[in-house]
Length: 198
Image (cartoon, rainbow, N blue to C red):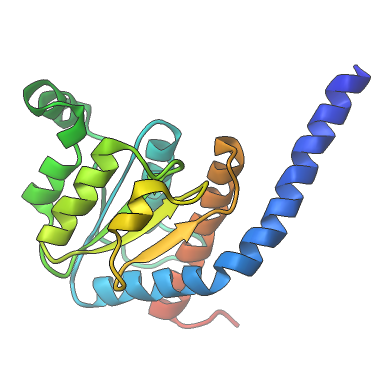
């Protein structure tokens, strides 16, 4: 029991250290990402969001907060989770291969002025890389949330894109930081669209 308790306490200690490090390293980039997303929305653009596995849950989390509400009531914002429609995902995977499941949707739904938001802890998932390429071909900006050292995703991004790379190798820790980043983005978007709360 002592080993179990110490391991649980170590999980919290790791997360606490990473919280402080991520805040120091990424706060300016999170602000830049929020500004990019708000400018997209103000120009009547939409957000296309994707990820695999736990990152798919993060993508759907972000979209739910934007279409619904985070803390404040406001009109729903145009955001689509490309990983949520199982019929589309399985049709595209069956017909074109899993590497194309997001890229094909970006090609069908994305336009110049829209923004692609991707979640990928490793930065190396082939379908995420293909989605980024498809978005860039359509003149879309990209906000990429990764971990480790950003992988191939970091190499694909342009200066107009925003890379939020959590400085840690453990997928669980990276995903925990991505959840907090989602909340930071949602609060910033609300404040920029609705004005600061008193």
